[in-house]
View: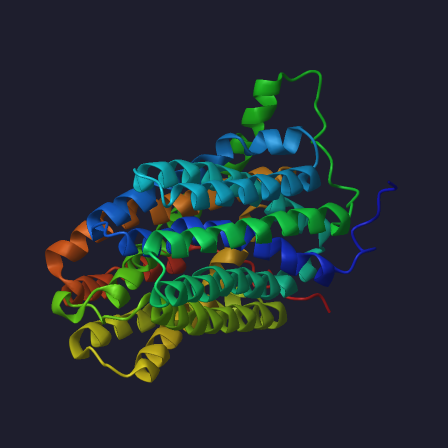
Length: 427
């Protein structure tokens, strides 16, 4: 097949579907697994601990990201990993009804997580190779939207499906097994679609190997170049602490919504959680991301940074109100969750653009993988103890702690340095 340039296939034909495929496994591993284990009767402490360890593949993915650069094309890795993820979903579905469900499903979630992290390396590198900088800025919102659509499909529509099956008399295990078989079919279909639709950017090739350098030296070179940045301390602090509060909050939202009112939760059903958090909340988050990408492409990241920081962190206080008033109206709960998620979507766009900013250079794919790996570490560590904190403090005090935890996000935003023109469309 003759290679095609990056502009010969409309980005709309592949950017949306690529980020659907990137979002589905991540959301299933990090978020929907929490709902699954909650429905299986696992404690909040264990849920937070077990599912937070699943961040590890994203934390250490920079260790193997140079191999993605050095062997085969990003296109090859994208398609191969999507097919492997589809197989992993099928294996989770097969083991949910089996004895030892937590042990076996965690094993396949681990395989899925490593495959998904590898896919992220290739997909994010492919995104930067196939689009010009102003297109990257413009499509940040688009890819965020379709990543969030993946969230709606995963923790919204599919969770609602599992909840409906539960309500119709199916066991929890059977309902969730059917859901994961459907996910397997979706991922396999996406893999086949991308096999034929992804473009062939001229720059999508293995990094040239200098015979004067060993493979191990080539492997290390991408890391060295990243950490030689003059502003590396500010960059690391931003990646680790910008989402310190959200890292803890995200693990406890679904348990809070599902737990009975006697335990301080809102007592929603599985299907209602799929609507509130997985659908309405995800749509609000998607709209926030779309708006964030649009405004950055017109005025630049630096102009909008503080607006995004405030929008991301202050709405976390809504959960304090929810835990204290415990409203019964589904409309009120939807509005509250949607407000917080919209702010998070708008504010996270700044984080996405900073990752692109620090990834410029010869090893774009490696540098972006390092950035996302550090981001994952910043999510993993706070999330691990969030379940224990919640069970010790109760939901009301825990959400107050979350609001206090937003302070580091404001501090790191003050020390990061951004070119006033970065992200703004030329002309």
